[in-house]
Image (cartoon, rainbow over the protein chains, first blue to last red):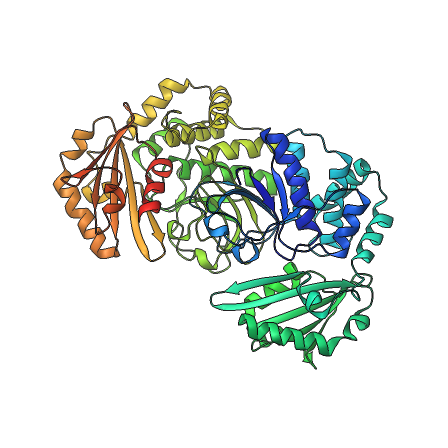
Length: 305
Length: 305
């Protein structure tokens, strides 16, 4: 493939898909040559709602890339979360809002990261910096990504920059933030239609610390008990995954987007990484006020594992 | 140390020192609290010339930092080139123009990198972006860093952004680019005053690829034969260094800044990483048109080692 391609992480969330589509638009305009968006997995119901609302086609799926392929990464940098073959790609650009983990290139690149709530907030900045006009559909995608990542600006990851971007983008996209935002988030909480296997992979991030491999998966809901009706089956599926992938820990976080709380199913040899902070009873840790994997769950595992 | 500190790489060149001083100024203004510049080694004659010309004190030396110290890195990201203790620091911000190698943080951070000729070109952009006025002395430092890294805009690493920055900064600093630039570069070519041991460490970068450790050192001169008068002693010192540090390769690049050519003394078990491209005769590789470690020497070693 000769053209530069852009994609977010595996098990793509709304930010990864929207930021890929938006970055392809921005880079195509900046470079004067077509940059193509891709996805590394199935779209969530929430993301489908967004693309339908703004009448945008979903990006094509890609599993593996060839050696030397020029790529742009959005919303991730860890190779374990990226496309197969990333080690031998030519990484041209990264725009991200996560920690950097074991990232390596052989040549200098454009890398833009900030500790903000969403990648799309940085893309919004890049349009501004380059004096490129934002089309209403692109504004809608960025707005959706920020609402998704910050749970309507309520997550502790939310910064002033995210708030400012949302305000501006809602004007350009011509939507009411709260009405649209809640409808969109609720669309992502219809979890009944997923098999248990799909559920635990819906938004799962694989992490590595030294030789320890673990996964933090997260789903949003308006009723945690509703999801826990399938607790036994979810546990069976997670235990299968732990065996198959040699994981030390699997944390399946169920987040109540209305009340901003979470409960997590915690399994594996290294449950202590969670139980040092949250009591685990019957494989469940109750996490009041926790909604952010990145800011509230990942750091405590990294510290304790 | 409670305050945030900023520093460039070990064996600091003019960019590392000037960018530390400038970044401290910029960040102090952005944060409204004092950010302190440091250096990780002795200043070169070129850098001394710059600080004397613009009447600026040299930053204090630091060797090791405590756990949890908040730091800003400029002009590097590889831990092997950074301060002792960097693994346990809290890296708040990085501004750099090198490839990223094995970089890891536990939390999201501000990371701004572009494939331009000099870190100071990016700092110049950050002043602009944040609408902060550039003081003439800070302009002088950034200008000097860019002239140094790009050898007066002649290195193949030079981009349009570097050229534009130099033009603007020269106006603010009120100096003639060519006169000042050549004087500054020449100040750095007085190599006779260094012992051989000092010479090979003056601007030496330690690299690692998997388990292979190697060093690329570089000095600027107006006469390569002048430096090679001490060839035998330089070789002895390099061989000592190879033994002491377990290096597989040491490349000592002598760059003629007037004619934009280099010759390199190449020693170690893995000389083949150079000899595949440049014939090595009597430990010397002649490299016509080569002036950039980053763009012309590093990639070929990384490919062949």
